[in-house]
Image 1 (spheres, rainbow, N blue to C red):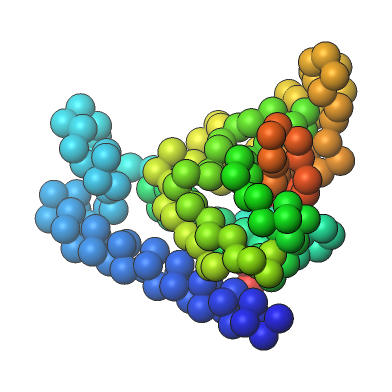
Image 2 (cartoon, rainbow, N blue to C red):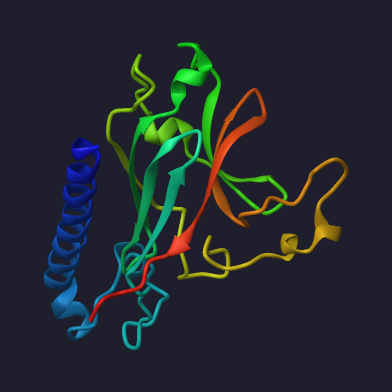
Length: 198
């Protein structure tokens, strides 16, 4: 468990340092062209975009904590450009698969357990024989927490029971990280915004 806590602290420090480093580098890189207004690289390459009053995403942090069959966590850190870095680790739980971890998937699911994002390939989670995992992380350009309308912290219309189709049952945790194998969910944890401390 000490290993898990140490990784949490180091991961958060790494994500924060990385975000600040990217911010500093990009501000310096675009400073002359934008009159001290930070512009994300994608926006800066768009010659039609205005150079003034460019909107940035707020930096947002969220978590999904597993405390049942699986014990571990996912942390999400959104940067000013709307990209989201996901880091995580598990101390146990995967032993339920008896070392057959083929087809295990890590997905962001909605309230009806429909896949919003499949994180499996990018995270490339290494599962150990004792049921734990090695630390994992990846920055997803296409996933945002609350910068755009499709942010994973925003509710969707699937929160209504009537919007779940067929035999899909409404999940108790809304949008969540699900651990699935052969299309069956074995564990899930709600994705929750972490409050900023001032």
